[in-house]
Amino acid sequence: MKSHPRLRKALRVTGIVIASLIGFVIVLLGTGALVVRSQWGQKKLLAFALPIINNALTGRVEIGGIGGDIFHRLVLRDIKLYDSEAVLSASVGEAAVRYNLLAIVHKDVHITHAQISDAWVRARYLRDGQINLAALLKPRPPSGPLPVTITVDDAVVDLGAKFDPKQGTSVPPVDAQLHLEAAARIFDPHITADIKKLNLRAHAPLEAQIDLSGGVSVLKGAQPQ
Image 1 (tube, helix red, strand yellow):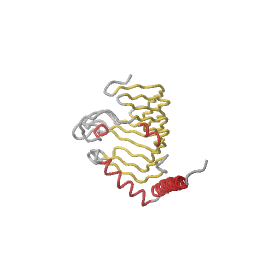
Image 2 (cartoon, rainbow, N blue to C red):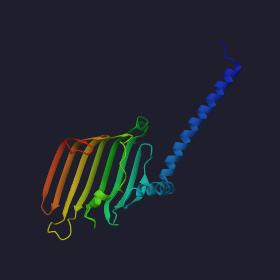
Image 3 (tube, helix red, strand yellow):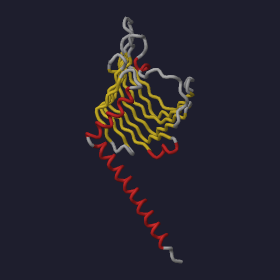
C-alpha cells in the first residue's frame, strides 16, 4: 500500500522537527556542561545560587569553586560557613556528590554517592546563649512535609570538630576527629539511616575512641529509635 504524498511529507517534516529538537537539547546540555567548567560559568552560577542560600541563613556561606558536569556530578570546593556573629563555624575542602538526575521525575532526590573531605566544624556558644550550629537557619513559620523523598545510597564524611564550652566554666575545649560511612533516606516525617561505619576519636581533654555500626530510624520530632 502506497502512502499518500502529503502524509509522507508531513512525516518527513515531523521527523526533521523532532531531530532538530533533539539536536538542540544535546547542544544545550553540552553548552551547559561547558559553561559550568569555565571560570565565567562558575562565577555566574555561584552569583545566582549564593544569595538564595544566604537569604536562609543567619550568617553567610562562601564557596571558592564549583565543578562537575552538573548532570551526574557536582563538586564544591573551599566552602566556608560563618555564624550570625561572623565567626567561622565550618569549612570544607571539597564536597563531591553524584546523583541520578532523572529520579526527580518520581519526586526522589537520589544521591548515589557523596563525599566530604578536609572538613572542620566548630561548635561554640553565641552571646545569646544558643549554640552556633543550632542557630544557622533563620526562623521560619511551620511548613508542610517535604515534597520529595531524599535518598542517599552512600556517604563518606571525614572531619575535625572542636567544641568550645561557655566562658567562665572550668570545662576545657574538646577536639575530635570523625569518620562516617552511611546511607540514609528521608521520606518526611521519617528519617532512616544505615551507619556502615562510625569512628569518633576525641583528643582532649582525654583520649577516647568510639566505633559503631548499625541502623537508626527517626520520626521527625521524636527521639531516635
